[in-house]
Image (cartoon, rainbow, N blue to C red):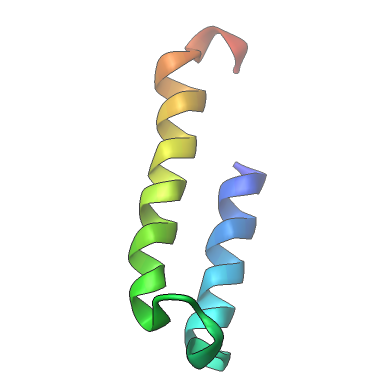
Length: 51
């Protein structure tokens, strides 16, 4: 959960403060969203016994 929150916070800051420095500009938020979904899926759906 902490990793997902850190990735989301980092991308929100980048989205509003420095979108010109991102590889895909503001579209980078879409990739970050899918990365957060990947983290969620692997941690809570694939390995639910570890939580």
